[in-house]
Image 1 (spheres, helix red, strand yellow):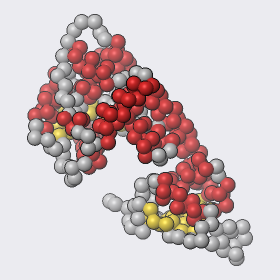
Image 2 (cartoon, rainbow, N blue to C red):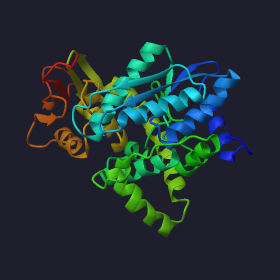
Image 3 (cartoon, one colour):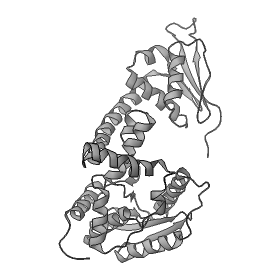
Image 4 (tube, rainbow, N blue to C red):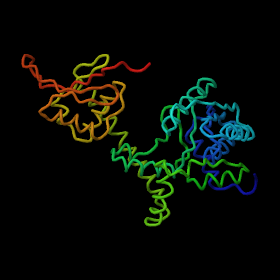
Length: 336
């Protein structure tokens, strides 16, 4: 540690300060990798100044033989930076998959917030992570929200370093004298993200230039602004179109849905489904719901994930002004 303060470290400190409330209590999610250690180092400066209270949480997934030692070293380095408290939380990963590990990790984060009284958890995702997320979204073909990448703020989770690249994180660690862990699975080609990182991104940089990741991250920011505004409008339309709702079901007017612009209608339908506690439908299932809406021969049901079925209910001729509805029914109770 020492020498001239790197510009990227100053930028990281400013980004954390801008993303957090002065005097608040936050935890750094630290894996021991360069990104999260750089985040911890930048936040530690604010901790020393007294403008933030900063602790850390290290999740030991126990999926690799040396995971306990990696977690212990990350905890020691966080304590050396002056962070307090520093929690190490071992978890059980039900299946050997990225999603299962993520679920276990976020469950541990929730426990850490409750145990410490912290209000936010800071995550060390970078501009490069965001660019990769945009490319993954393009591959899924699931619309604007997918292109929007990772949000800078969702619930108690903050990603203040989305404007800084991965190389900047390594530079911060070198300046601060932090030895960072390199996850061996980051080179495993069985994970799609690694293929994007090591195979696709180098080609994009070669063809489009070194600024390609920054351009993709900027696309994510602009797409998220558009998507969030459309979601606000969709929530208003959902409230206006809902005829009846109750525990486990919702009915929406068919004529009003048909009149909506496609960008709003798809969001209203997704919100209707997610409001019943089910995952938002993918493109294929959403297309099937829209087929019901626009008069397919079948009136349903269309089966969606999360035990939700959608029917088209014919108009009740005895009720003046009735023009039919889409009925969304959850056929199983929400999980506890």
